[in-house]
Image (cartoon, rainbow, N blue to C red):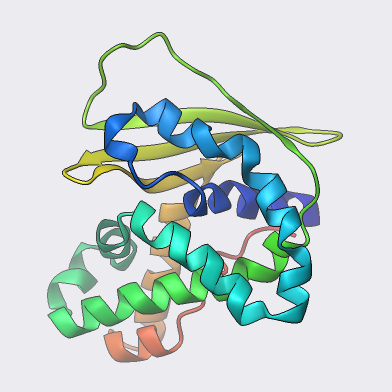
Amino acid sequence: MKRMKKVFILAFSILFLVPANSGEINPETFIDSNAQSMVQVIVNNQDLFESDPDLFKKKIKDIFEPMVDFRRVSASVMGKENYLKSSAEQRSEFIEVFKNSLLDTYASTLAQWGDQKIVTNFSNKTTYEKIEDVNQDLLTESNSYPITYKVRKSGEGWKIINIIVNGVNLGLTFRNQFKALAEEFDGDIDKVILNWTSDANIPE
């Protein structure tokens, strides 16, 4: 249903809003610090999306691009077999196509989102592994949706590498999408990239 799709997209939009100096904070604070202001940021830019959608997209891209490990995410989406047989140029091209397609696909939905509440489930941890899960609940007027962010500590701080919303695994969904396109185009990576759309077939 449409609400489920919006929940999925709003959860993904946290990627756009986490702070750049993430190396100095724990992964739960990394996710939570801007989650509470996320909806307000989106709502405040609704008019901008109508008047200047390119500027709206640029504002989002300028924030989210450094926050996600797109190299790692894109490699995972391609899958080991397709990644190994692709050239360095193809890998770089897919990273850009993947990023831009996500933004183009979800910008209009982000602009239409209303007020919601996000609650981070803080643990009692004082030390953290290199890869951690951060759990949240997104509360709407009538439902609660669990969200899990998988984050990885790198030399640049915490980076988000996957999201699971209400049981829907974003990384796995996109990986299956890439695999289906590769089969459709007989393993032609260039054609897969040319025909890529990051909609994840999220239920309406």
